[in-house]
Length: 265
Image 1 (cartoon, rainbow, N blue to C red):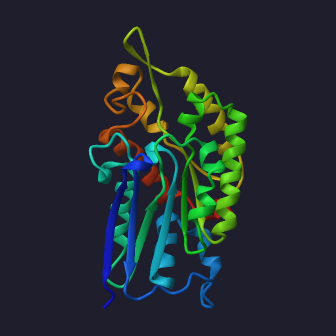
Image 2 (cartoon, helix red, strand yellow; image 1 turned 30 degrees about the vertical axis):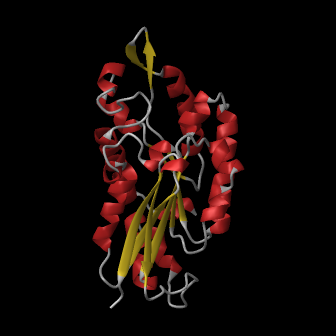
């Protein structure tokens, strides 16, 4: 029987990087195209069905997450209550003793899209073993560093290209983060400047054929019309709390269940 060891690492020096590392005494089958894998079957699969397909083919599946502090789970009471932690738990429902999903979270506090690109994190961490790549764009940090929307969009395109080059058989999903709160005279208000900035990027990515895009701001705006209401979900004005990450996860989970991966071809 294959024995499984799981280690959750919190790298404080890296600003809160969480990684789920899973290893087995028996090595998983090499992730190359299996002779009996009928790729035509993939066209009508949603994201979870695709991962299940890979599990049944290779007995293992790997998910890689990239992004900033909101990918790493900063703000949640515990990592398991972040969107990535909740996704990790969801993925365990499609596993058994003979097959498993490994989720590696490379989110780092403070990372912008520019940081991810310049530091080569996607190229360094990805391989053909990965089946699903999730790129949280880091545009909250882009905005606060005065990176233009056009530059952010260009950076994101390059990150997508890197992901597809390093993991050519993977599904790549891009995700904009949560809203932000501005404090004017001590009163919380929705940060409309950031909202406009993020909206430009979302409009560009949503309109591009072949890109799977999730706008994680949407469920927050559906729940909160003003800054005071938004504080219920984004306690410090930037990072969601556990309740906010629950909104994020539910929105993402619904997308995973209804979106056919053929849209990314």
